[in-house]
Image 1: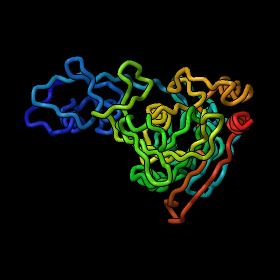
Image 2: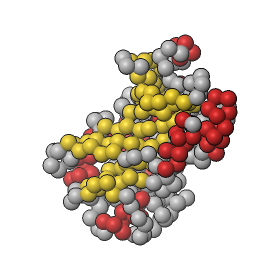
Image 3: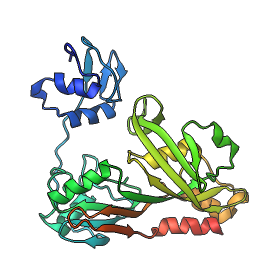
Length: 334
């Protein structure tokens, strides 16, 4: 497509104005396509919705229609932390995908919720994502809030958009993110706040060569801020740590990408953790083996707080560490 005369300053707005009406692409859909790297100019991917465009620019937009997936109720046990007429808070287990997709058409949280809630889930997310307001990765455990009414969905979504939802994650990482580490002074986007709180501020965008991954960038992308505080250290000298992370923004894979950028990849993270290992000298034979064999990113959504979208009440929930992470920590302590 070709950008017409006097285009809006932003790429997403210009696309929204000039895309052929028959394509049925909303601005929100176009923003997602931009983030996915589906928009390019002269062969160069434009993955920032704020990118500048000019009259006469020829843009290529590549998208594929989603494969139809039948979303059906499935009798899958759920760990329900809280439920009322407006919402349900679930402690998602490791290995469960949040909503159906071509690669995982069944066994998802949505399939389980459809069985548990019947037809009471919010319809705003569409047939494939009823009630889903936010997500956590398949191999991340922990708390999710799901809307059972459209009013609850709208109210919760507004809080997530305003970054007012309180979300804390526990992670086990290589190394110890301490303000006294001189190496960190040279890492762009990394700083410390009072109380030895690590702050990571960057942009995040799709990886240039692996579109399934996210990458830290400083031009373009989406603003992302992560904070982390040490809860416990393991080994000698400071081989690993249990950290408490909280999000100012909620981007895909944010904690995993940010901690790796700072040099503290999550143990077990096959995508971002690299090939680091813990030595037996540092953490003992049991600790080294437990870290080496840990099969997924050591990340757990441990607490969740928000304002109830109907009653206005302050809601706060906690979920204990799952057995695999608790076992990993016990081995590292040993």
